Image 1 (cartoon, rainbow, N blue to C red):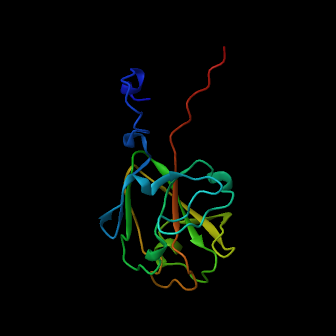
Image 2: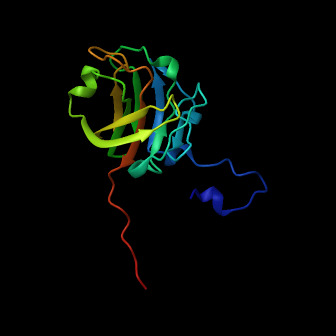
Amino acid sequence: RRSSDLFSTGAADPGPDPGDNLISDVRFEGVAAGPEAIGQLATNAPIYSDRTLVYGDPGALLGAEYILTRNDDRRGTDDGFLTFDLSMDATVYVLFDSRATALPAWLNDDGWAPTGQAITTDDRGTTRVVHSKDFSAGLVELGGNAAAPMFGARSMYGVAAISNADPAPSCSV
């Protein structure tokens, strides 16, 4: 909690402090996205900021911070297409269209690994295959959805992250 939350001022609570987010400073092709581009992954959470499609049960990623990408960006090919900052060490997850028969080189190499998990969507009944990679706190750069040699994906990928910080020790009384 922020210290300002401890004292009532009569003003409406502005919501979570952006400094508490694991993910911040989201940029698509160098253009900043607003704080509304970050959410908590849950069943029926929106997939995109430019569509009304939603995720099904996110399984082990329930509650993970995630980025609402834009499906209109699905044809992006640039390195560093999507960038964001992590406030602490985390595992980053890319949720990629299961219709792809070839992944972009950046997702097929460079330490990314399939988790064996898939998340359903209401995007024509497709699923998103989950890939993960550990990152240190700081800048994360992801390539474009359609970067070579990708073939077959028709929807923009999603991104989620979970902190690698040790859980708080439990107390028993």
